Length: 272
Image (tube, rainbow, N blue to C red; front, side):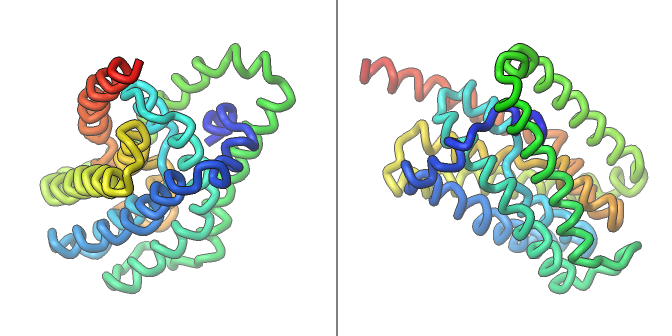
């Protein structure tokens, strides 16, 4: 989140006023469609309560910084991607605790720790808003220095992300292996359905391929680190869907980015 903040300016938050259709459709997909899909897929696959809650938590998590990078590689509209990531990260202060509470009640999950929503809100605030604001402050205060270290910082953040995934899987290795087939099918279905539906909605809204690419990528690369961190503070079983999802989301999203890069490149050449 701090690295995301290093890439943001206040203009990224104002863009919703300049290009409301793309941002609005993207955020509706991310904040409403994705969690609802997670609820439906958890029911469809008959996931046990803790895993179902974890899948909904994942579906409610905001987009991640890797979505911005993959959007760039796919020749999508990076500004739209960054704006959606920034706004959804701030909205996560409300949407993540809300989806988590609804999922726990709906699936009747029996968890290791009692869930206090005030604590979840505080945790999401510390994970998202504080480092995001710090990164933006550093960019404004030290723009030249930030530009010089940004690529290194992004690589470090990816490495830390991978360590978080490995630790999450290792902490519940036995249960993760037992649940892998069940969880992998549900997580993969969520990933592909969210990307496919969001791309179709963007196309129907006549946003264009580059904007549709950004919106789909945002739905395909959630901030799984946030989901894992929040879940681990409640019950490590809840973290399994996000950890399993993280194992293949770059493969599916990367494949989509490769296809769209060729399509968007051809469109750019046609209009050149």
